[in-house]
Image (cartoon, rainbow, N blue to C red; front, side, top):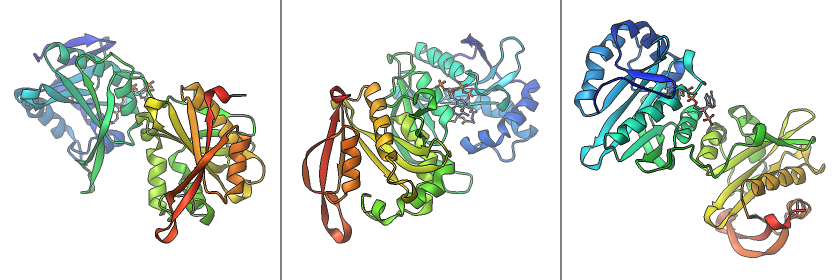
Length: 368
Ligand SMILES: CC(C)(COP(=O)(O)OP(=O)(O)OC[C@H]1O[C@@H](n2cnc3c(N)ncnc32)[C@H](O)[C@@H]1OP(=O)(O)O)[C@@H](O)C(=O)NCCC(=O)NCCS
């Protein structure tokens, strides 16, 4: 890559300069930037910014990568930074990284800059660009998808955290001949962010749901359906709530809160896992808090979830329930599922035993 200015998609990529120091300090000192870019100096002051301009950025170029300021084409004001790090020269692969200053977020700057730099890199011979994000970094994962990057997997403990620990990074990758994006998602967003029938509302799980969800998943009758059947601790449930957006974007699972539409309170949870995308098959699970049972809310939730699943292309939904779980079997029957059979010893039970599961299925063609 050669260091000339790139202008495309409404952003300018140019070298940083001394006049950028105040904006670099404000942008790199921002808590969100610091959270997701833990290698930045801490604190990030004017000396850090001057070091970046005179030493850090030139060193990236000298190592075969590139580093740019993202600037507004009309005012030339700094909006963020973006660059490539050469991974293995013989393989033509690079890591792409970026940040956008708080005053420029949420208006497509990261998406525009990633498109612009990616096109330039591929034109210069790059074969593969890899973008590593924290699983909780929803805007960055959305930018990756918008630019045609695909979910490849998780790099375990790939990043050093500021507290001395390590955390996983999700790998999003784009090849030179991949389509430009956005990447088609197995699990699109819910229309308008929610599903509802006036009585129950389904929405994506959120960090604030942790207490209610923990209470739900530690009820003995809910634990009995978990794999393995042991109560989760509060932190694992809090983590599940924090990671729900990331798992959804990756196409792993749609994890939802069932909310009482009248009160706004979380009364249960349900999830859709796309267990066999190539065969068009997905599975559903659900549970309700005791005070919400007996009012048909689970049936309503599963009907809503099934309707959405068929709308996004699922051909077959299935659910398994323990034979003695009469209420759950009734929910499935009332939501249009048919009993298909019994899987012996399907689930791990208590004390090393195995429990059977009655299997129910509903096809897209079964609708109404
Ligand atoms: C990640 C970051 C660079 C995104 O910059 P941005 O310019 O706001 O991103 P864009 O406006 O291009 O938006 C990208 C996508 O995220 C979505 N998005 C933006 N802000 C969001 C938010 N707060 N919550 C959820 N989604 C959000 C946008 O709608 C868009 O999604 P879409 O294509 O589905 O519509 C910026 O938030 C940032 O600098 N964060 C701190 C540093 C960082 O995380 N760097 C990346 C490390 S991998």
